[in-house]
Amino acid sequence: QVPPVESGGGLVQAGGSLRLSCAASGRTFSSYDMGWFRQAPGNEREFVAAISRSGGNTYYGDSVKGRFTVSRENAKNTVDLQMNSLKPEDTAVYYCARKAGDSGSYSSIWSYDYWGQGTQVTVSS
Image (cartoon, rainbow, N blue to C red; front, side, top):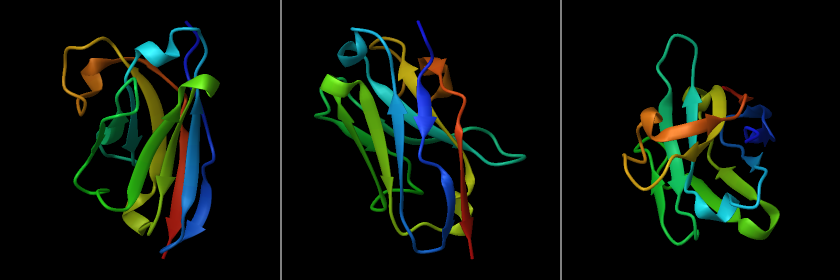
């Protein structure tokens, strides 16, 4: 299995928007739930959002609810994270990951088996 690849990070002013994309390989992409996490320097990796394999169910961390939206397009093997009303505290490296099966919490890093290399998001004040 090839790890997913994130793109779309960059520098944005507070209040602005960014859209991250995660490209995954393989014919079984639609069989897996997917998640987004982030990690700021000195902090633990934090749950951001997750989406079920069909796209019918989504989950969000408390700090991003109402501002971020996760979506997927199984025909293209992609998962996107639309980030609006960005704040300086959203600055972090953002990671896309594949959830390993049906067990485990969506918000736990231990529930995911394949991780991308991450993309940097910097929000200036």
